[in-house]
Image (tube, rainbow, N blue to C red; front, side):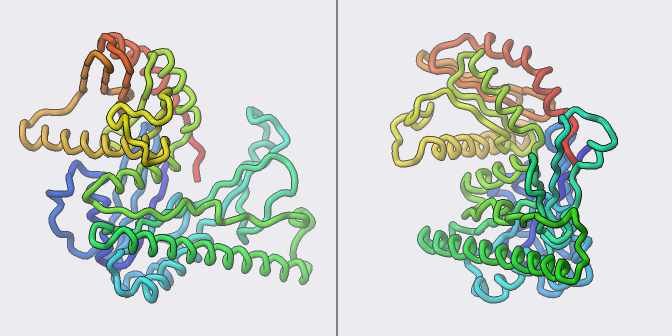
Length: 393
């Protein structure tokens, strides 16, 4: 089973533990209660989509603990990281002082202990020769050099920022602070790159760089920054952000999406969405619908079509998880499937693979049994894609 290490960091009280519990446990916001401070690191292993295990590190945010993460324990915390999720409290009075200082130090430690890797080869991808295996993912120790020619794949830790508790500040304040933190990040990554390039230049001047390292160009670390997002546990914004986070960690995602489009056309469906069955996060979605129309908000034109669709799917995530929780808590039964058939649309949600559910929407009346048969037919194929061995980081 492939592991993806995800670290949650931020000052104490930012909401890391409640966020993790809401996303990965069968809980809803109303029942979260109050969490005490996390002491050290709280590890949670989450099986996600067949052979992927998310190793989630909820790191305590007290000042002395954060200091240890950046000094004596830094290599243990920041090595082999697939994603750093840094949570800022939008209400914090120290956002531009100590909060900023800790965050920028975390960024520097991250790219020092989990430097990007690159692979390139002039051989065919299917070659199993010793030479081809030797070309896979050599470490770039100074976060600088890439071969000047040839096909290149770069992998590195993704950075996400969650500006949390947006319900406690105005939208204008939240957006202003979000943009400010994004600017910090771009500037910090630029400085990390510059220092790495200078280090390599110094080595070249001293004659300590071998010939193979000459003529290389630096890695642009900004490509690993995935953005800053304003969130709260009280709406679908948290599901939206986490759906984006986990989508970057799923192997074969492009293959899944490509085959899902073929599946949607074979069903004559207008929309098909795959959800992970425990968290109800959106894995991927495809749409054959004309822009400007959705099966719930048909007349809404205030948002870009793609953003409107994404927001809709994440609202469905939140609603289904709440409904599933109420089934277990109230009726003591398990949620399995939903079928709705109306004259102008048909909706079916059912188990897809052992880790996912699929939602199919058609713009006309279709016998639900037809769609469930299509799901059963496609299930082995999608199960085989999810079980394909992913590349380790």
